[in-house]
Length: 116
Image 1: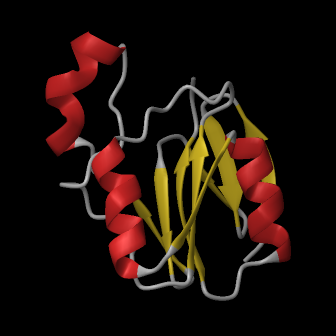
Image 2 (image 1 turned 90 degrees about the vertical axis):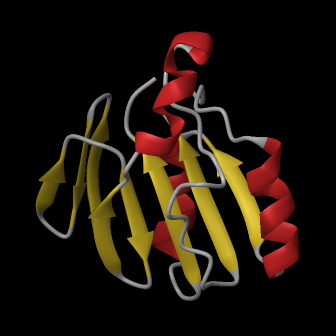
C-alpha cells in the first residue's frame, strides 16, 4: 500500500485521493462511518472514535491516525477492546501514523482521521 500525500482534509493512498476519514483493513480501504459517534460531535467538536464503530480488529497492530493536529479522541472503551483482542494500539497524529504504516503494513490495520 502506497501512502503519498497527506494534508489537512485529504490523503492519497495507492493513487486515489480521499477527503474523508478512512479505514485500512487488511489492504482494503473504506470510508469511516461516523454515525455512532455523531451524538458526541457537539460535546467534543468532532466525532470521537467509539467502540460501536466498525473498527478493523483482525490484525496484530491497529494504528489510529488522530488527525493533522492529533485531536481525534479515542474513547477508553476502544483502548480496552484492543487489549481484549490482543491488538497493539498506536494512537499518533496522522502524519506519524502514515510513517508507521509505510514501514509496518503487514498485520497492521488503521483508522486515519484526515482533519483536526
